Length: 113
Length: 115
Image 1 (tube, chains in turn brown, cyan):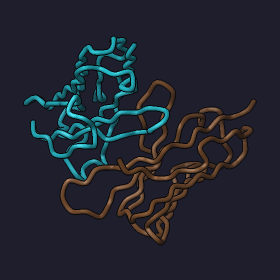
Image 2 (tube, helix red, strand yellow):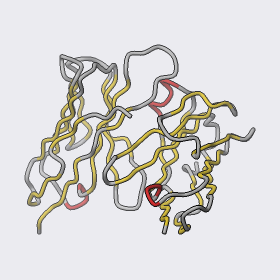
Image 3 (cartoon, one colour):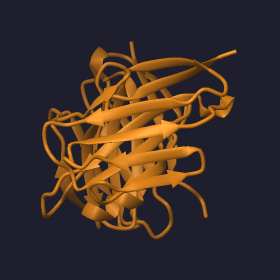
């Protein structure tokens, strides 16, 4: 099935560093979502974006809906140990009817002590 | 309120067997979607059920099937298991179908290992 290209695949950072990741698609989306998955758990929604150009924050997390509607970015500022996990973007296409989420390939974040 | 409950959490099966996984959605949620998560393929959509009807289906072979009961609980079944079916199977529930999926809540998943 269709997938979104997410980069980087993995990141190794030190506590306190800022993190940036992005998601791109060859087709446009009407909605972008960012999820975080902890080991052994299901993904949890972090941020939802509904309009091109929209910039939304949730604590230390900030996400943007690209103006082309084909990409989205997630930034984490001042990373802490609990930020470790896999981050997924997900998009909802502009089709009427039974839309379903398409997920990115994930970015694995590791914090080096 | 209770979250999405998936049972069992872990399962080991041998090739050729069949397996049934269960998902109890959040109370009041009528839509249940299933995803397969593997390291190589990421999260792949299997199917969605809403009010006991399959509303959407991903690109998986017919060995993968599901159903939803009147209380919104859902089961998925995989017959004639193959090694490649080893994965984390995630269930997500939401109030409504389609754009209601924005209210997705995922369960913790069932880790299936096929040996």
